[in-house]
Image (cartoon, rainbow over all chains, first blue to last red; front, side, top):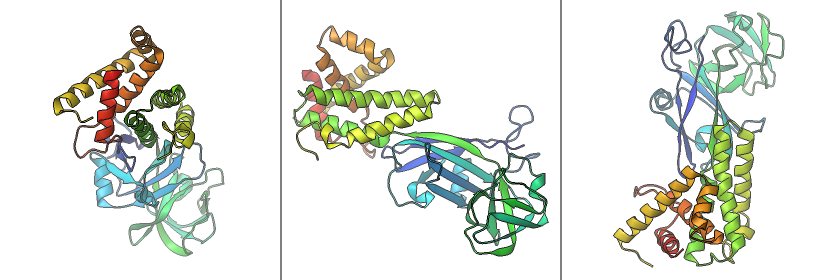
Length: 268
Length: 81
């Protein structure tokens, strides 16, 4: 059974991109039984990625792609995803812990009917979903062999028969029959984005030094506390305390952007 | 305020070394050691200056959080402290 792995490579210093790579590797019966290649599926020709901010149940961004640059980047040194990759305006990723779920889609011969506004999918031909391993979490619909729409999750809390299964959200596209779908297992990855909090903090230290206003003990207390919070968030994250890390970074973000914590008398 | 390249490099190198020592030894121990020479307020300022300097990337194409002017001011302040 394929066991996909998504790895973090780097974040741009201004947090405008996050580089991720597929760390699944090639199948080896003893050293990597969850890798790509026979008897497992080959490396994907279609990938999906869903992004959530820590604790949010709703995703803030979604990607479904067969782009050659994304696929080769993921299988190589990594691909630098931007906010635009997820259908968001150009900008920096928000400070905090981000939770990515990766879907390397397989090819599977299933044909279905999709109805606009409905979560029910009717299987009309091919492999039925009730025979799929529970590790398969998502599907994507194809149009002329290319992925269309977005990643849809299989609702495994609902009954799955040879004739029907449910999605966790209603199909948003137009109603259509004879649609081929592909299936995917999933991999989770958490990424700590602290760069903008650090940027805000360091800019304040720079301003304090330049304006020669470092004599206010409250100012330096506040800046030291924020610095320690960033260190502490990094330590929490490494110890898998994602909530602690997230809350500390959000606190720094709020405090640093508050005019009251400006090192000198005016906000700039 | 303008430092020569040699002064800049020396100040930057010393500051980064000091900051890395503080990370390695832990903040509390570092403050204790610094506090034997400086008061706590000065030690905290020095810590902040060193932290800010440690984020500086010498690659000319890199994004930096500090301006050259702020860098020079921090190095001067750190050396005064």
